[in-house]
Image (cartoon, rainbow, N blue to C red; front, side, top):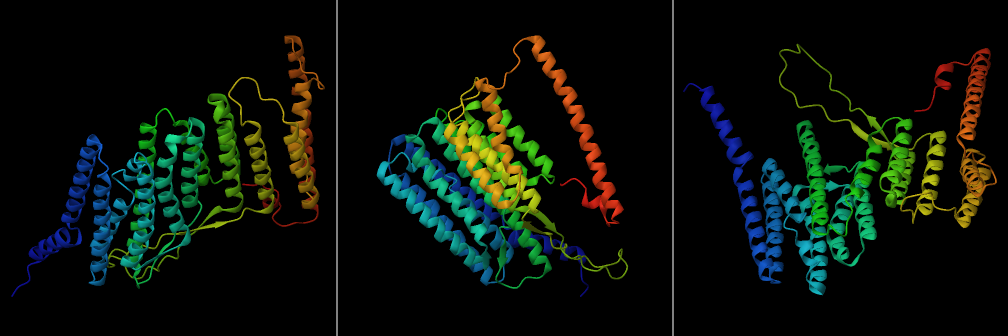
Length: 454
């Protein structure tokens, strides 16, 4: 019997559509989600605590998805099992706002939120077992931190004022996102996979992480809408600005981003200047000790005619590593983090207007710590912090006179201009002298040795 390629092609497409990419899985999840949501809204209108039973149905469905995924993996149908696992993770992240509802049920709701968190940890372990995966500690930490915030923060928001509530949400969101952004979050397979299987695992992992953070953002937006009088949406800008430093490659870009974040916040919304300084300090410390460094994966050799080769699996993605910055960069970043920590305390009660008065105790602590730091590390850069603070204190107390009239301000600007010119000229001559000495010694790679740090 002659083989019909067209019929075989349609059979392959039908198999993929009905078994590999089975639409009934998505239909099942959509029906359960809509049904649970409608039932929950009806019970809310009635003021019934039976909403807990509706949430239990969603939790039971998540367990059913995990069990189905395990069955498919053990029978060799790994692709539809991945789809069920993604759906299970969606239901694990509380799409019906069960944890928000628990905040209105008093002690019963607190116990229900704790039970949801315990069930989340158990489902996470069961999901890894079902798909034969071994998530790393950082991957589990991201999910645990996210679930803990979803369970605990709705319980706290009704009892907190606007400022502490916003700070808690910002710190939690930054902690979860920073743990994910500055870690590898590796998800390894216990079962043996070929090159294509590893590529599919990498793609599925990226999709899962995007879905996780999308779900967390949806919950945060829900909190902002529900507690509009108790949460300030500006904190999302602060979190996003601090996280953006993760993808900046040059150190100067990091400094510009941090300076813009702190100064811009103090100008636009000065009440959040201390939070901006705190997040900036964390971003600088992460850059100092967890600088991203890309490592390209080895490419398979190309054999034969490239136009007649059989289709191959895509090459594995480059592995992302995190290394500490060089000692000079670490010193600069640590100094900047210390300055941000100083601003965190100094701007704690700042709400606009003129700069807050100096805290003599804080200035003394800064001076002692930086002197010890400079003495133990045999470095001088940290001493710039107490010097700058002392100069500002002297100018504001009148020890160093400041110009008041237009004539005095003009003369001060002219003096500063000549001083800047002299400093720039001296720096250029000093730099040229160092390069000439290095060239006279016959040092190799002079340009690299004296290149500006990145």
